[in-house]
Image 1 (cartoon, rainbow, N blue to C red):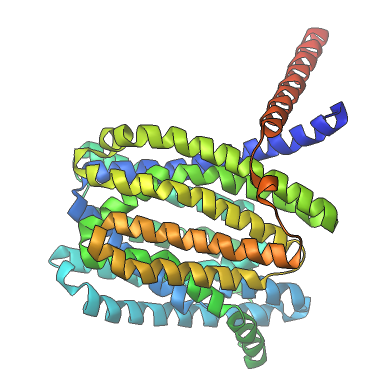
Image 2 (image 1 turned 90 degrees about the horizontal axis):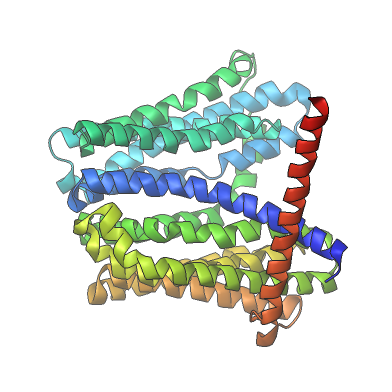
Length: 457
């Protein structure tokens, strides 16, 4: 490897490392939140809180047909003089969607989890569900900001909401007032409060004299419905597992979420590689695409595999240490979930390669197969092996998604041999060389800064 090639690859490596640490930090907030809730609530109570909260996200996901992406689309395609009407049309759409979601979730939860809504928990749950009215509105307003390339507030709220909740959970835990009711009321308050910055940023549009236009609504709803099937599949995949586990026992959901939290940080490795590699795949030709995809594939196997081995060796000790002895039943499911980061990350990488060539149908097919296999097999494995069975079913879902995209890539772009995908000594050597190049560049920057300081003094 010559020096210029090493420098270019070290630049990619540096960006991947930066992305990894930022994603690791965000995931770390989620893990810390889970640890605090596990320490302050029993598995049964934590499962009830998760179950009640889960239904709000599930119903919102089904009712929201894609108002965020539609807002960006309409804002970008519409004329400037139409934007007041576009805003008011989307505003009505968002408020109606939020109202429908509140009615649906109240009906569904009365039917499915009535036995868990007892005493003050019922009122706290209803307050949380009432704040669902603001969910589509926040999505719409953030879509307007995104269409205007104003991402700072969106990113701040994305990190600030879970960060604030985690700090409050810690305060409640330290003062001995952490409970299901406190968690529900606090989640409702923070969810509602997160809308206020969006309203302030959009205050001029809110006071504009735009009108609801049926023609704009028709265009928007048609655009949204074209991708609604894929959105529903994704929502079912994200929430279906939790619903099945909650129907088993609330504690089962708490154990599974603990296992997911313990292994979730591993996902930051393949996701970081996927995010930083996709732009490179877009700009290269077909021959180079295959070469780069195979290289990223091997790096994903290498780093994720090593990470899984390291994490798996300490999980039996970390879960009781951080989450408490009551969550020991989450150890085996956590170990069974480790391969999901590998197969899920490799599936996403193949998906990025296909997306870079304009092929996107695989996303719906692969996701549909994943959800069908995972949830379908879970109806059998839950009875046989409990939460470990759920972890096995999720692994089967990620595996089938990987197989679908592997075959799709081999058929539409280029056939892949197993030898091209397995990490070799050369890959490890290249990583070491890139690391050394990064260290040399860092040393040069440090020396340059010191020289500048000496010169100024």
